[in-house]
Amino acid sequence: MSPLPTAHVPLPDLAFSEDGAPYSREFGDIYFSRAGGAAETEHVFLRGNDLPMRWQGRPHFTISELGFGTGLNFLVTYREFLRRCEPSQHLHFISVERYPLTPEMLAQAHAAWLPAEDAPLLKSLLDHYPLRLPGWHQLKLPRCTLTLGFGDADTLLTTLDAQVDAWFLDGFSPAKNPGMWEESVLAQVARLSAADASFATFTAAGAVNRALQAHGFDVQKTAGFGHKRDMLIGKRANKTPTPPSTPSSIFVIGAGIAGATIAHALAERGAAVTVLERTCIASGASGNPAAVLYPQLTKFYTPATAWHFTGYDFMLRQIARWKALGLNFTHQQPGMLRLPRPDQSAEGFASLQLDASIMRYVTRTQAAEIAGMDVASDGWFLPHGSWISPPELCHALLQHTNITLREQTGVQSIARDGNQWRVTLDSGEMLAAEQLIVANAGDAPRLLADYPMPMGISAGQVSIIPAPVPPLHCIISHRGYVIPAGEQWLMGATYDRSDYSGAVTDANHAENLVHARAALPGLALNETSIIGRTSLRATTPDRLPYVGELAPGLHVSIGHGSRGMISAPLAAEILAAQLFHEPIPLARNLLAAIHPRRRTKAK
Ligand SMILES: Cc1cc2nc3c(=O)[nH]c(=O)nc-3n(C[C@H](O)[C@H](O)[C@H](O)COP(=O)(O)OP(=O)(O)OC[C@H]3O[C@@H](n4cnc5c(N)ncnc54)[C@H](O)[C@@H]3O)c2cc1C
Image (cartoon, rainbow, N blue to C red; front, side, top):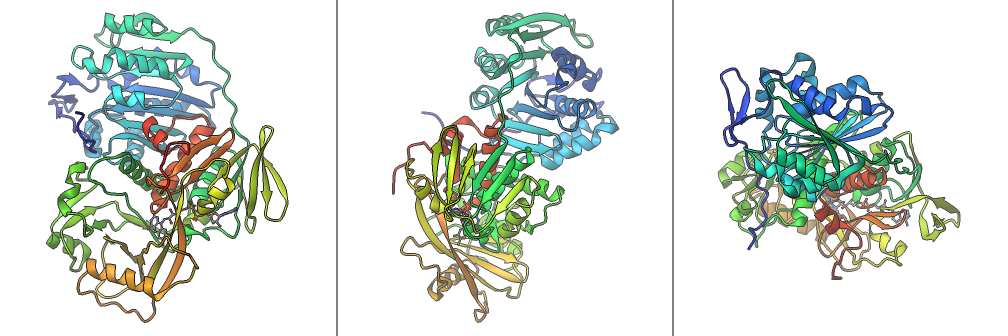
């Protein structure tokens, strides 16, 4: 029986020699050559793949590496790419690592060796470094996207969707780390290679040479670096394929978080995007003044848990990036205390084996210290737990110069018309779109009646009160949540599948208050000036959204349920990567799990 899935990511057995060079005790091998790690990268991997020459004239170039290690190959390549390429060119760098270093280890590994001029690149990597979660992580750096996989190369590569132009076959030597050089790994290298892909590796091992030849590479021995006599380089003999075309005009239906994030992701890639919105920006569920970024906790690392944690991690990095780009919206990261619900035990989530930097068990006393007030029980603390203002974020995202926003523009129906999608507006006006993205939540099943997907609607109300004294220092998640949002507390949220009138009710306020009081005993709340907001969630039976291409030119990002703030931004990046033929930032099994054509049982 295979073990139950967990989120465990093993640490490397890292040690340092007297001169400060990092090496792995487990593999008995060094991370990089003491004769000059950066010079070795340039000799073996850049020149071995005929780089930077092959970058010339390529708007996108994809490199994939086996063995991220200290990230030295990446840093050297990124530096050379920035130096030698035009600002309009973009580097995709994919790398896998079974024993990822922590950010602290990375900093230490480079302390004695990295040239001062490369220090800003290391800082950029550390600033964007992902949480310690298994699977793929996408780091969006200036002019470069780093897709970093934490896990076994053998397994991870089978889940990758990319067209690689050049391979850096690194990792510890075949004698010391045979797993990295197995036939199954090299078969994946072949599967993922573009028609004219090249590779370079420091090893000259005969078995590697034969395996790569068997997979269609023309292999050559050439002079190695330093004391190494030989190394291998090779190319696939095929002609450079013509790059696939990318869309120039795209329509998005809906201006909530799903529509705004996808519109922005496409606009950033240079597409002209028109957003059609029935009322105004963030008028649906994305209109609550504050919303929590919180992954779903389950006993085991199921596909739904993996999706939500990957989305959480991605959204945290996107927020930092959007802020750096000058987008103006409220984001606070006070951390989140997750208290068990009545049917859960506080210890229950230990089986997830999440790294302590992501989530740690706290006793009731410790939890009270973090919260600044008494709490009901032991629980889990997530230091990255945050809240945002979704309407502010949607407004900021839609301000891009490549986006045309049409508010008060409802879509009545859509239909295929030759190579295009005909969009009929409520006003009767007709538009034609080459690519259409449906992101209108609960109204999607009506527009997509020809493509039935089980979806439900659940109404919810949030309650807002003036912040009481003493102040709450973190977000509380229990049967609902409490967000200390400056002068106010926002408490949420109710679930109601019966008729929806849109009215804020006292009964729903009472429910939110009961849950808040149960989590924070002894709480004195001023209910006299309570206000609220109601809206609808679009839900799916398996709590995973529908994301992907439904029919040629028709894409969806819907069904984000109760987790739209961490689910929609990752969905946006996946759709944009698919439309622009970039490496996909999610494992293929998870892509299949969120695909709109997957089998889901109607509830
Ligand atoms: C009470 C409540 C509290 C919540 N709290 C949280 C939270 O703390 N954290 C979290 O992550 N998630 C939370 N959620 C869930 C989250 O709000 C949703 O998952 C998310 O907002 C969905 O975004 P969306 O863009 O898919 O849909 P919406 O925000 O609903 O946007 C859909 C948009 O499409 C437009 N539209 C609809 N039909 C058409 C049409 N035919 N033509 C043109 N436009 C159309 C609508 O006007 C609307 O603006 C909460 C939800 C509710 C209801």
